[in-house]
Length: 422
Ligand code: SF4
Ligand code: SF4
Image (cartoon, rainbow, N blue to C red):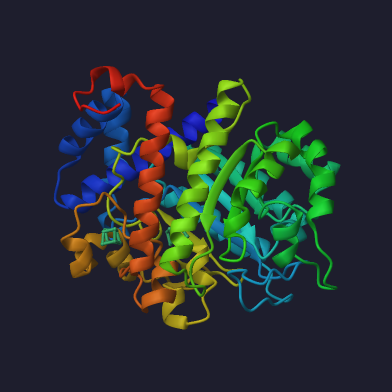
């Protein structure tokens, strides 16, 4: 829990600085540090260090990193139908030299005292030996730069064993499993190369995984076919012992109708009711989307290309892994190769995304970040132009958060509300 709070604080500070510098690119380190100090109640020394790190490298194209995503391989032991790596290639593996250069870039450009490295793929556990090389290298580099590293790995979980779990626990590498729900919906897409479902395998491993990582997070991606089963899928995962969730619709190539989005919203509210009931019973559970403060607007645009970069196995650098997985070269938005030259100026649109806001966002009063760049590209051909589908999902999720806030407050609003409602 403590680590989660720390990660969340770092992420809030990252977003705050990103937003401040985007809204006012010319603001001085002094003004920025005062704003950070006031907003987060940290010491003036810490605030000055953070503000100074962001501003002291103008030659870096204002690149101040908080995170990198290392795609260790584009190979995978499964053949999930909607995987964002569309062109799997078992020969695309990251070398240690490439990974080390990526770590060096993160350390040199780090704008924060804590940075995050996400190990992703393909299936990153296919490259466990490489992980065993990168982790000590990064810890040593971080020690030299006086930086703290947090680790995440996104995995389908099927290759986990006690050796890997022990290593992850020792090195505080936090796992996020990709599980789509109960057996029916998980096995609909997440199959082995010979076509077998993988839910039973994951379900069997969860007690062992939980013995090493008691707070177990799952990314539950909801497809249009599975939208009717969302609540049941959630229940089955809770029964298995999963206690942290990222619930999100599978967006991109797949288009949602308005009716399907409405159904998604209604089912999300049902999950919300179950969530609060579990919490009332004292069961440890956390869904970030239901807990976020809706008033904490993080600004337009996400962290990709602003404070975070992703590397392909061959060293190609892009703002985000999801963008790297797009088939269209323009969509991938590669800014160079870590083993050669990087053109950091190409990141400018991502560092100042507000300048690329389309008209419909410019006049919109919702506190929305304008959609995922990768999904936007798939749906509209432009990273910065969100589809109507994004707007509808945003409204649905905000409404759910609002209801969540009311449930958390236990009706406290009613006592001070002047509306004549029953
Ligand atoms: S809700 Fe739609 S129009 Fe409004 S900011 Fe978000 S993407 Fe843009
Ligand atoms: S919102 Fe999309 S583009 Fe941004 S970091 Fe997430 S996956 Fe990448």
